[in-house]
Length: 350
Image (tube, rainbow, N blue to C red; front, side):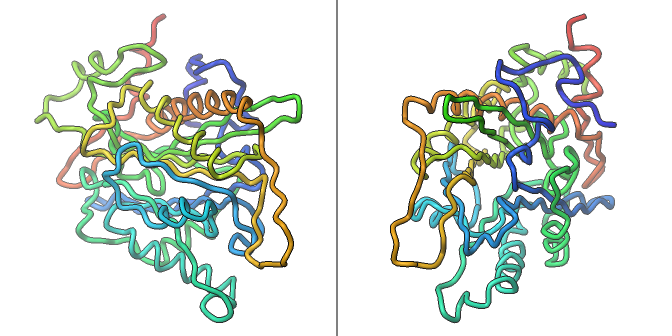
């Protein structure tokens, strides 16, 4: 059983997590992976499904935000123009964005005969991080079958760490990967959940902070010496909620993922793609124009601070979970990345 942050007695923030403390605490959300691990090949695909119904015909309110735009995502332009997402979200390595988008389009065509026939086309959403330190990314080994496997394996319970799109990732000079966390939001009008999933691949070791503690410099002293590199990684942050919000409010909320990101020590370096994609399942938008007004519920603007707090806390914890649940990995050219878990007994105050 992999230990997560709270298993070490470390609690981020003051809001309570959901039952599983992962993004799928938001009802309807599911996550799946496909992983490739063989010597110089360390990579994969992760799929996030917003809800269990037909997503093209029941779009979710959404937004995206680039804290630093060094990224190669697909689909965010239309998300921000129309304020909706109409497909699952796929995450993979940088040079596999094309094959992921192609298979995601095929997946949507199989489910929706009207696409390209009686209605328009479809907007696939794909995000990426560069896993070339551990993975021979030039080989472009991700196939449509791997994408299909990730989409077909989605569930409410999923593995974190060196799995799926997180398999080859490097975070703060240690092993990065997939991590998740959630928070409960309680209002007079109802109780809601906000969940975060990250693929972490950014930062330099000396920058690492753990719940405010400077642990990076201590860990660096214990690592084998190697040539210093700049912050050339990225992070994909996916935020889900069932809080009733407009796309403009979603965008305001997901921007605060940058607070959680910075609390771990990130400076969002020039070579780092810090990309956030968020959605709410509370208001589903029909693709069909039924010649009736759309009825949308949304919180008052004065209520939004609690959601800001929730996404900040969950992002910080998700990043740390991604590192703790990742295992020490040897990859391309014998490159090694160590798990944060190997240093926890030494860096946590007794």
